[in-house]
Image: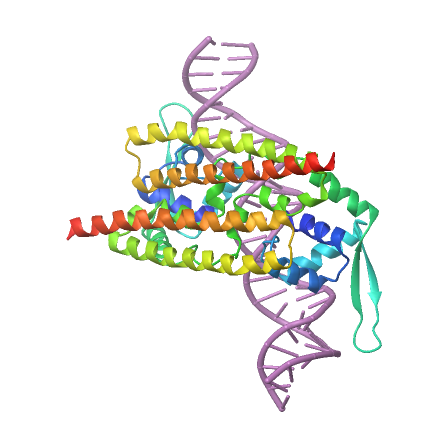
Amino acid sequence: MSLRHILLGLLSENSGHGYGLRKEILHRLGHFRNINEGQLYTELAKMEKEGLIEREVVVPEKGPARKLLHITARGKGVFQDWLESDEHEGEGVLYDFVHGYPFLTKCTFLQHLAPAEALDKVRIQLSRMERKRETYQEILPGMERRKADPFRLRILSLGIQEMELRIEWLKELARDLKQECKEAS
Amino acid sequence: MSLRHILLGLLSENSGHGYGLRKEILHRLGHFRNINEGQLYTELAKMEKEGLIEREVVVPEKGPARKLLHITARGKGVFQDWLESDEHEGEGVLYDFVHGYPFLTKCTFLQHLAPAEALDKVRIQLSRMERKRETYQEILPGMERRKADPFRLRILSLGIQEMELRIEWLKELARDLKQECKEAS
DNA sequence: ATGGGCATGTAAGCGGTTACATGATTAT
DNA sequence: ATAATCATGTAACCGCTTACATGCCCAT
């Protein structure tokens, strides 16, 4: 899932400038990546060179020039082709769900830790996921109020359910580890 | 979550050679990445240069030399430090769950597709996730039989639950899109 | 006047992918 | 024979991160 597609998607909805796109990706729900300026501007430059976007230099009466970005017909074509293609819908890695939650990979090796230490880690995870679920739940009403795109609303609600799943899973894990700790003592 | 940690983890359990590690990462449950030779051997070379592993050249009576890899004390230390640290347990990206399921990012832009086309995509996803759930469920009994590490068993069971979550979510989405199709006609 | 947000960039490096190359062993 | 699998590597490239650099605008 490359940044390029997200940028094309956003720009096919509205023209904008680099910084604004970044804010949108960071804050507006439905776009989910953390983004750094480095990649953003280099990617935009590349996209311009390939004729997917154009820059309109806007010189305000006051202040420095801003560059307003527009998607070109070619850019729109590339975006639509991607949308209609099955790229990023395929099999990918068998255990893809682990990618979204790196703690699971670490869990794979938790056997090498003392049960008490492992338990600590699991508890910290638990509170982090609870926090995350709350964050999502706080975002939801605002999105509903301003009638955000229903697809994005759904994605958020999936996120909430997913956090709940993780929370229950971590609770079970913690319970078992606690038992193990007792047995060891 | 870098390959390095996984390799250190595996080698701290057993010595082995490159190809075997790759197979283990690919097939044995609990290790979840698809891996390509390119990265594997270059990473192993780097790790050797840094003194994390050592190669023992094993020359069989017949055939070419094989390189058996052993973890060094230093390597074990690095691995344990990582295990005890909170690396890969932290916040990361806010919407991390989307990372593990790139189709969701695509969903963000599904509004740009005709409902009928979007429905097609969702249905294909649905059958893919059903397939995936089945695959996981087929793997489970074998793991239980050979008494695999309980952490890995748990991870797999989380995976099954996660696929079930996705399936229900996709079903709802499909239902709504079907409705939209009807209304449009 | 100072700090925070707006806005645009460059450079180095890392982790990972894709593709290529080689050769031996084992199974059909 | 030949195809599949075992086994080890190299080279080019890509997407992304980290860190740095610059300068304007606005509110306190």
